[in-house]
Length: 300
Ligand SMILES: Cc1ncc(C[n+]2csc(CCOP(=O)(O)OP(=O)(O)O)c2C)c(N)n1
Ligand SMILES: O=c1ccn([C@@H]2O[C@H](COP(=O)(O)O)[C@@H](O)[C@H]2O)c(=O)[nH]1
Image (cartoon, helix red, strand yellow):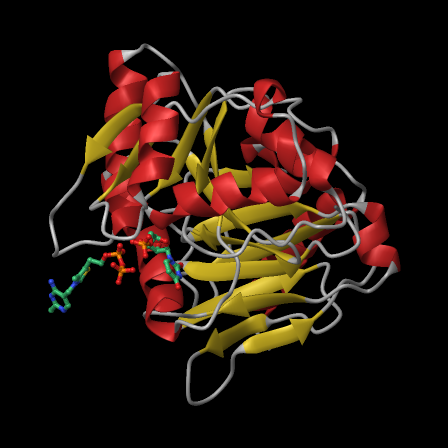
């Protein structure tokens, strides 16, 4: 290995060491490397702290919550769901997601007075019973019909959410989308596609797909630092890097099976069932967008 290459690797290791000492790095800490991963155009580190935000719930109240048409499986922690919902700046239910929410409130015996109504209901309305739509509409929810059949109700809902926030002057910086896995593989893929498309809707809003046992989002090309709560590290919960869409080259720290300028690609390597090495922060350097999904089973 050439001397230059060793120098560059040690620069990255020193960034990783800073990160491992629990503090999320500043851009000034970043040293550029020159692996076959071309990091030269990276301008900043993207810091990700969604677990911290969710644990200290609503520490960040500048978020919106969106409920899609999938089961709401948080039966072990109803209060978590109620808090996430009530303390959001904007609440959206999408088409059949409105019915899911209505049912969830009924099953969990929540007093409807305690629960804020959705600010908006969007969708093509093909899977929303009229009595549920009427119930919320009469209570003051804004209904926005999005009939276009070339896009999913999910992406259309995010577009309407953005318009609503701009019109009402509501600054948000996070959207938590409640979407659990269910039988429809096509919908799961479409939901991932939505994560890729949101950059055309929001400028600097982070989108997290939250399920009862997992949290999923898209890491952009560049340096990413993800804060990992201690119980997830202690319990050796799973985490994963999934190169949906295109291959990417990744350098990581903080994982049990780290990637050392390794190509992730369907047909060769996809990093599933990975876990943590105990570091408070996982760093991911990637030359292309990559899906990060992690267990939050013991967090909520
Ligand atoms: C090439 C192509 N394939 C498929 C479709 C059909 N299509 C894509 S998104 C969409 C709307 C889906 O609505 P959504 O509420 O997200 O899902 P649903 O539960 O109604 O299937 C439809 C019909 C299309 N317009 N173009
Ligand atoms: O099996 C499913 C069904 C739906 N979704 C998501 O919910 C929205 C709204 O669904 P509707 O069936 O139109 O009520 C849809 O756009 C998907 O994002 C899902 O994930 N899985």
